[in-house]
Structure formats: C-alpha cells, structure tokens
Amino acid sequence: MKLLISEGQYKKLMKPDAGKQPQQALGGWATKDPVTSVADMRNKLAVTEGFKATKLTDGTPNKVYVVEFEVQAGLGIREGTAGSMYD
Image (cartoon, rainbow, N blue to C red; front, top):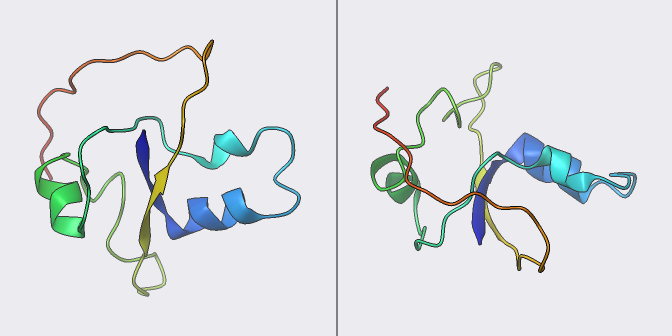
C-alpha cells in the first residue's frame, strides 16, 4: 500500500518519540496505484488542496511524500472506490 503524506505528517512519523501509535500521523487512505508526481496525486487520486495543500500557511511549499507499507495480516482494512472530488 502506498500513502501520500504531507511534510508535517512525515516529520511526525519520523520523530523518535512517535510513540506506540506512529500511524496516527498518517492519512486516512492509501492506494495500490502508482504515484510518481503531484499531478498523479491531483488528477488520478483526486487529492484536493483541502487534503494536501501545495503551500503551507506561511507560504512555503508543502512537500508531499509517497510512503510504502506492507499491510500485516489481521489489520482491518476497508477497500473501495472514493467518490468524485473537486477543488
């Protein structure tokens, strides 16, 4: 599974003190589709500015990371297709 996370989420995930539940820094969905650019994120996966802003509130660019995970057996996952989304 691949997740798209913002720079803030990435920093929280990488903190040594992320604790016993670092997954709380992650987003709420993932994809099996290839993600190679911000254009893929916007056009193929319908990730709007509201979910992953291009710029932070201070005007600096927001970096977006693609993080890949192996899902372990027993983890509850709901699969399906998301509805249409627009900016």
